[in-house]
Length: 510
Image (cartoon, rainbow, N blue to C red; front, side, top):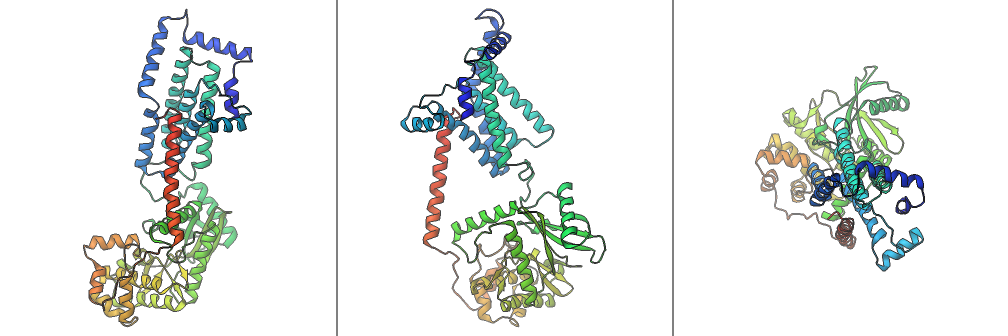
């Protein structure tokens, strides 16, 4: 706001500024008033009024929605909305606005902002460059287009005598600076790259800088010399960046790592927030408070299951890559292992997979993400991986979900009849029926749902048809906190949309 106060008074007390204004005005409109070049500026002014600022920001919003870059969208709309909201404080004449303006500037009087359109367009175009243009030639071209647009608007208003040159330049600088500051702080390029390729946002780019940082941290903190870091089995992961580490000593030749960052922490929070709104809090689903806590939990669950006799990759340790922001969980890379569906699922594999579920029950733990990519087979032994969602002392319902998902995973290849025939050696008919009774869309991981759909069969129904009848178990958990949270969420969204609309209208963007 202080910049706007300076902007409003610019040019009144400086001979140098007045001289600059005259020189620019003479350059744009040489000769006597009413000369031929003035008609050209009038033409540009008409084109600008016909197109309006909507021609700039509406396509940008549509492009961000199409690309599903929601954070860029929120920051973009929020930035131009806040810039537009200043128009209310600067020029409106309501009691509330006068009070706010008085507290900020010391005077309730209107602020004269003759170049307000230049300020708004500068903010819109610069915010658009940061949100839409990838670095490189495309962004350079976007900067040229943005500069041309703002310069054309400013020159037109100066040539027509609406603004002085100094005020137009300062307005453009204020608007551009506000947009650049918002983009730099809220959507830094390193964490939120501008891209139009469909990708899993959980998969961080293993560029040269990050790779060198990780390799150095592994060497310093674990005493393991690693020569190479590459992505590994990305198709089965949506909550971290799995990678393979080649060791220098060659014994073992490879280790497995899961790289976590603040990106994954934010995703975890939004995921659990959405789960509360859709289903109620499904047991222990409180969000983690930091990346450190997230990776500590998975390391602990791996060691707990290992000590309980469950076959999991041997934990190696946790590496702090960037304090508070990036951590690497290092475990054994199970040698010669394939995903369970690639093993052919012989009877021995079916038996060992079901045995692991029984051992988890005995250890008082739940995996909570049993799906094909998390069930590996080495020979005839089954190894469970990715225990980041693991839970200690789960309810009977949660344990039944693990059993159901293991049955469905095995049935993709072995079929329900053979899987049930082998399962009776480990579980009672009541336990198997209960597992199928709790099965629903919310309990089955997405990868497993997709593979079941591709078979064209309802495997859960086929299991139920071979088991004692049990009433279905609902996953909905209603509580006063869930209702209040839902009301607050809907009310907050409506209020935010209303404020954004009013701000855009106040700034002439609607």
